[in-house]
Length: 320
Ligand SMILES: C[S@@+](CC[C@H](N)C(=O)[O-])C[C@H]1O[C@@H](n2cnc3c(N)ncnc32)[C@H](O)[C@@H]1O
Image 1 (cartoon, protein in one colour):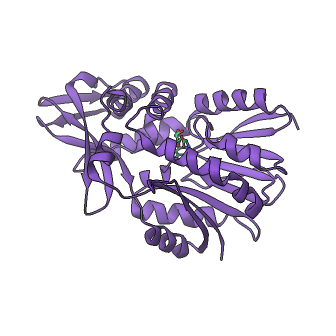
Image 2 (cartoon, rainbow, N blue to C red):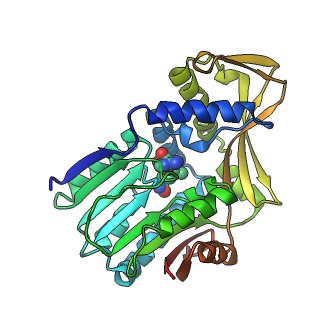
């Protein structure tokens, strides 16, 4: 096997077809909504990486702290020979895990962003030339066809990305992850934790406006891919804490009454002045909630680790 393989499991037009379907359904919905996976073209992935370095964005630092502290324990508990990472992005923090997994044979990063996958694989191969990297361009919500690599498997889902799924999507997703696990395999899940509102809101509304650019990037994607005429300057970035659902909502607020044309959908969409469109939720968790969502999917939580300030948690679970 060559050290790097890139497999596209999405058919070539699947991205376009899925984008058209999601944009049509989301813009006809009331209130309007768009799924967060469309942020991540090459520019969106680069903006997300920039977000992870911002002083306000604590989740990456907190999760890295746990990985640095606990990687040896995770390696001892799992003995993983294959590490599958869902929504792997830059794979930057994952290196702590890769370095600790002494018997690791293959790393399988899975992402919708081809630019993120190739960038991460190139960096990894330069520093770990003997590691097999089998990158998959795939949508982790749509069932995965994984390569036949040695077990045990460790499936990692880091960055708190699970919080971007709505509760019903989360349970379907966890149930599908459960089907990937045989006895001896494990799931390593990163969840951001409920905390003070001001800390949460600042993490999604930074002072330098990088998160605002990231949020508006979805409009650039729709303009480019579907020929739409969204004016990103006619929208403002909004981040609010929904106390009832315990999630952050990112929205785009139309600054004026306007009509946006989307030729690929033969659609013209009206926005009222100050109308808000939801572009992302980021749910925050508590230990009991994580444990019971895992249990509902047939998974048993075996370890729960937090950073020193208990801002973020990593949990390890196995099939029951
Ligand atoms: C919040 S970022 C986290 C990146 C990285 N895991 C980290 O912890 O920094 C989410 C990542 O998941 C990817 N992603 C989002 N939705 C996806 C989906 N449905 N299928 C596959 N990848 C997805 C994005 O392209 C992005 O790289």
